[in-house]
Length: 548
Image 1 (cartoon, rainbow, N blue to C red):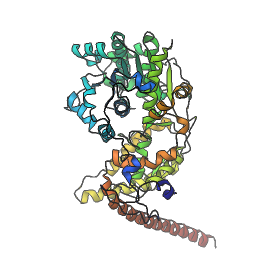
Image 2 (image 1 turned 60 degrees about the vertical axis):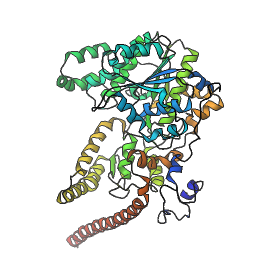
Image 3 (image 1 turned 30 degrees about the horizontal axis):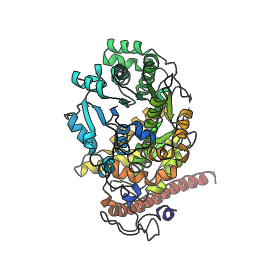
Image 4 (image 1 turned 90 degrees about the vertical axis):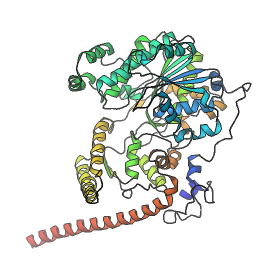
């Protein structure tokens, strides 16, 4: 199987990181080149921009466009920036709304963005991209977006397209902060866009889970459970602790402040943005890249990513939840392509009502948790991390008693032993703290562990059908062609290189370590089963003697 998957990759040793064959994993003479698998060896040649060259319909839509992006320092925002600068050669300029953070000013944070390996392809293919990108000081949590008079006037006079993706995505965010950024920030963006002279379209990035209190979610607005103006007034009149105590009552049947405030943000748009050329874009769970600019890129451990990383590093061995549940996930590059094309569609067609585009996969390409994990295990075994503390061993369960037993045996006892050894060696104990964090994350995500939603995505599917063949190649978001097997081939390698930042030069050492951990795992299993059998035999012998 693995030989067939990798037969197309190079047979010689790679220049930057010579590897040895994985003799104990695959009986193959082929050398697997991780950078080719990720797509980092397949960049196009650097190109000069020809102003007279006519592009595809989507490319031409962005000709001479000045784009404002909020949330550009985030996961989706980075991919959006990279995609626009690389595939839309005649775009005029991109402004990023950036706030100062951790002692770094706007210019420093802008430089930090492009230090990410995500932009390696952009730097190679479009080396003169620098003059098309600028940072503007601002903060979506402040009145007027925190813009200076000069910056505001610049945006009003120059911008033609706006992608509003700024949001706090922490599920357990304080209600005051979540309301400030997700609701008030959206309202402030609407006020700014009303003044923009040549606005073509405003694309608001929401989430499909803004209506997670419904199991069937169509591409339409829903009545919120609360009036956003009343909640804003409440937030402004109470202290932090009082609001914290009131939060369960405020958010009602929503699982967290994130989903609740994103729901209210949509209501702000429904009620106050009818005079604007805009759309609402609802992605489901956004995961690593599928194909562009490289495969498997990601920069966070939210959702499925954290689970795969925990399992792959030998830290996570059990989890409480229904592994047969289908989780709606979409690779981030497909999400961004759909967002770009939906913006072009709305600006061109000028619909009378604000359209909603849902980017989801479960209706067309459903995947169960257990199958997704198994695919990642099967392909990820070739790319172990040098930071692994144990071999792959994962036993999810939806039985609370079995989970508590497995948690005690596989997490608490090993965590206590290894932390004790760390203290004796003069090192900092961390494993039990990690397991406490995992428990906290599990509690936060418990609402989603046994539910399946149906997200209607008809408008997005129809949008794909309207694209010509060239745009379909440049801006792929065809869910029908999505292959979870293809995604999984590079996913764990991408996590290793881009997220864990484990250099590929460590692969030979990591594979040897992985083999040793495998042997240790087998030995431990043999001892464990032996103890269990001995214990069972002792009990049975005692019972037998008792009655005979």
